[in-house]
Every structure is written in C-alpha cells, then in structure tokens.
Amino acid sequence: GYRPQFYVRTTDVTGHIKQFQADDNTQIK
Image 1 (cartoon, rainbow, N blue to C red):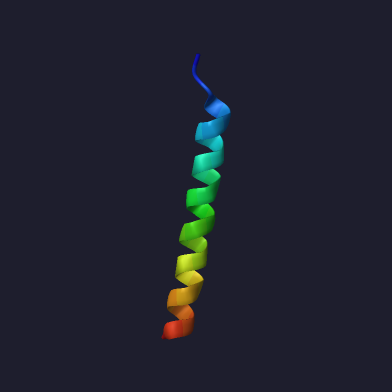
Image 2 (spheres, rainbow, N blue to C red):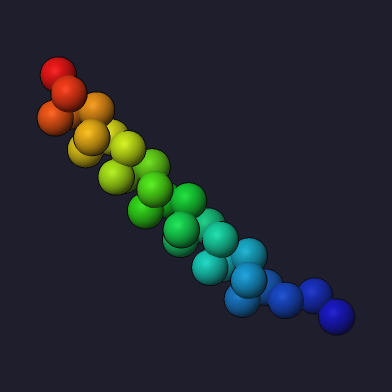
C-alpha cells in the first residue's frame, strides 16, 4: 500500500532544508 506519512515527512524535511539554505544565504551576504 501507499505510505502518505513518508511523503509528508519528506515535504517537511525539504521545507526545513530550504529555510536553512535561505538563512545561510543571508549570512553570506
């Protein structure tokens, strides 16, 4: 069967990484 929980977890991780990257970019500037 399908596991929506895994998909939700992946989305959360991606959003967290994106936010972290944005913060890092600000620091570099």
